[in-house]
Length: 253
Image (cartoon, rainbow, N blue to C red; front, side, top):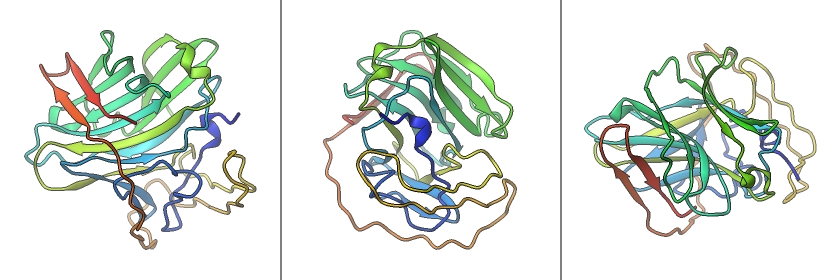
């Protein structure tokens, strides 16, 4: 069974790979200028992998560009490893509108031991969650090289399941529509991604992506292509109460 570390994408060819890597996506995420873009509107949109991975002994890292708060009370980017049980997951919820980052290990969409950080676009630019020898690690970085541990916890049993998925979801309660942007998914900064034959189980398609953008590059020449597929999902609810003390997001992924 593949680990999440086998899911990698440099988002550098202008077409989001919804056939293989991100086959669970909804809400029309796309790829442009060397990044994946997830709409952050009063609806819900998600960049989501297939449910074919395990978290044991591996993990996932990415560069996240959070949405602009505008007039929103909440304008959140949820970055989560999902189990097959709704609301049982682990990861980060980044919300610049509340100036907060929640570090979660949830059951039933709740985590009484959640850790809350004051959001910094610099310090929390990169996010990583990984499992090692019975311990989950949540880490952040300004550059994708030097990491700071923000939380550790005993690895939940579901981390070994073979049907986990990775999700980056966007939602805001008000304000102008915006995007969450994602780059360097399991690709170290400044390095080239060159994939041969796909190793994920749902395809035998050859992948020939390459990520060559320098971390400090100002612009890229890729052209975004809008997705035409339509994916239907159930209604979802987002609930925020006292700032950063009881923060829950609910979605039936």
